[in-house]
Image (cartoon, rainbow, N blue to C red; front, side, top):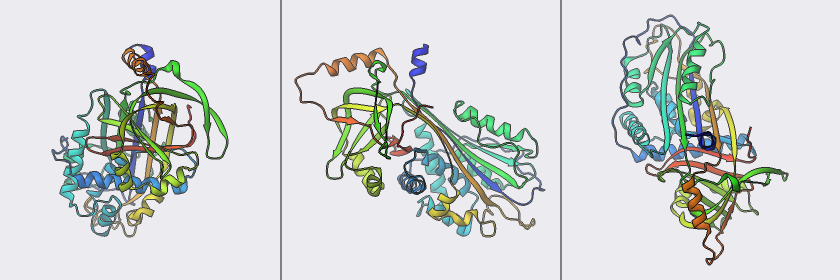
Length: 425
């Protein structure tokens, strides 16, 4: 691959999620030694798990927007749900039910939940050969803690978790964990844990997703021009705007004043959908109508049509603590040291201590730009050569917009975000 092609690649959703478990004692005999690494359990896709992920994702995103109005946001609800589902294998009683409710997994028992995630994992990794998607899970345990075999076995069998024991008091422990994160995000996220691990920390559950896709119809870099982007504040900013006229799945809802377009990757199995409110509307009005039902309805109405598309290049890093968000969604008991019940996770009955979630951190990276190839350039010229047809509709993303990256076969939403100001730093 030459340098021009390398620079032109599209990186979308290079992210890492880390879940920290805390406890007040650390003198126990470890049961982790000798655990074998298993492949993720074979399972069929459960539509209930996919639907739950979508509901959870929109609930999570809407809660974040309430606290971050008019800011760029980029999350992977799928990654967050995976990490919480792994943790769910150690929860019991009211804590387990609260997590099930927050993840919208009501009506599914633990076997169906685990098998559903395992089946979804396997199918997602067998996607488009022109799209790179990796999903990695790891469990880092403090030496001496007696984590239960059933908890460890379920996570290795169904989530392919890599299990490691570390001396958390060693100054190299953070470096070792961060190196795993760096490797599994292809260097895009190099650090998730600070130097020096808190003495009460006993466990890190980490999920990392790396995604790289090439547009099915690439943008010609020579057509990229600086253009005005209208910020929510009323200010204007000059940004590099990519441009292409081609056939895309497209939908215009005049009644609710927005447009939607889908930009496929590779063979079309995965795509980025962009929702653009009209000039007389804004994202706040759009999000009042966005829910699982409206999302599925709008996606179903996308129809292929020739469109003049202009969308800005952008690049951003995003980091957010999720404790307050997950508490607001009903998981507050899991963060309460006196009430949380993770008795299925470790044998701590004689220690007079209790496991609880101390901190949840989410970190992402995204970059969107052009990738030009000869085939795409020829296709572009051929399409643009049509001059007798009526002018195509215009989709000009020169104002704040919502976007999501979706696997169209399983209907899984991998990432979602909002761009209120395109950044390239």
